[in-house]
Length: 557
Ligand code: AMP
Image 1 (tube, rainbow, N blue to C red):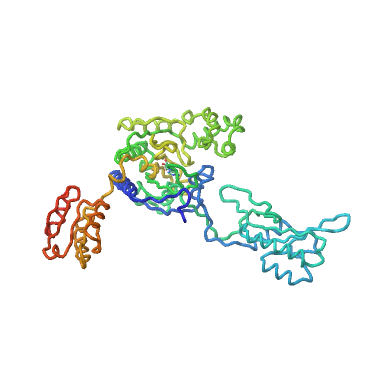
Image 2 (tube, rainbow, N blue to C red):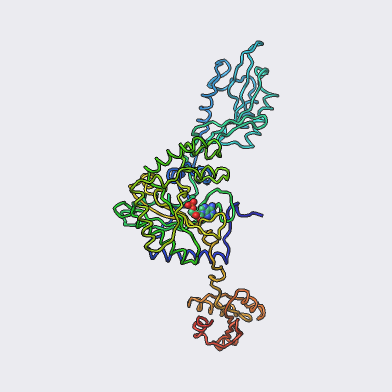
């Protein structure tokens, strides 16, 4: 049986009703705050996330679904580079890096068929004369079982058939492939597969390739679109989007590899007031309204300021110093982070590292005056509108682009993955992506988690059929369909039966569909143009003329 891939899931009815309920409610709220919908592609260039989110973040370094698209493998270049590095210094045996084999054309033809080449001769001077090794090499775009098998065949052919002049030489099969230093972090590949040496050659052996990534978050995509379409020229600066995101995380409750986010972003030139603490407070108040609106109570807003570039540099320096004497005891990720981007040490989830992290300096002590004043003003406005919050100066969020205000809304019902949503300000992101100065602030709600923390049930928000139409007897399907069409035009939810059903079966079907009414369409009813309408809960039944049906069904409880 084919199942949905690990970390993905099907959203099924009736749960989808809850999702629609949430989406309809948030769309209403966004309308009231003058946010407009933007839909960006679910994949983007890998570079967007590397530059936007940050190469040292867990998201970019470990969790992205990335692939090379539209690429062509340049085998010639791979061969040339490999030969350059492996050129034999014995000109008698080798021409242009290829071994000179005389006398056995069928062997060479067979090798060619296998896609294997007889390449460099490596002569070694020993006491008994010149011996050496001949490389049997397959050049491939990747390591594959087929290529390894071909090399094994070539080797046994060589043993039995190759030119006598190589009798004294050993033959080593070797598979050479482009070890693409993955764009973002380098991973050494290669090794020995039985008797075959597998060798990765670093460098770019693919042409016209483009690295693409399924979006792990959408702020970078929205800012990309903002820059690409010069949205500031159109006076647009408040956007929302709803859609799937992809991260290769370890799946657990509330954490999936395909999950859904509801994003909202305010971004614009500084002259539009996009830098103002009033925007931060407005966004936070909007989230509070939104959570109230979908009926989520008991949330906590955790708030911090992660400062600006200046503060960050000083803070990173202080962290680097503080980490120096202790980092050797920490996990390997932290050891790397301590050098490349110390702030990311706060993302560490290894339990043994937590006591060390707890003693590290706090960002709140490093804020410069403008950042402190900005943060104070955000808090003052929140107090005046009555949005409760707690300060958490350990909250740095797992994305590099954040500046100043950073926040999370958490909910107790969610267990370990308790953040319903997170967000913050990203004043330098547009410039980092090659755009004009455009301070911004936004958030992403984890829709999966929002739905998990709803107290409403799917049953309570789903709209059940108002009426089940039961055609009774031959030739009644057409009449029933005509009635269904009329009633549906009155915005009624109509479920339609089939004329082959007996009355008992129609009643069972109406019950199962949880319809409020059942409407009987038989020959007599059609003749009279009045139909038997029965309210299923009370058992009350009436004959209702066609013209009055819609009104009666709409009114009836
Ligand atoms: P982030 O983009 O990491 O700031 O995440 C924003 C919100 O998205 C989080 O607070 C979660 O609610 C949600 N989220 C992030 N990753 C996942 C995931 N793998 N599965 C489900 N929800 C997620």
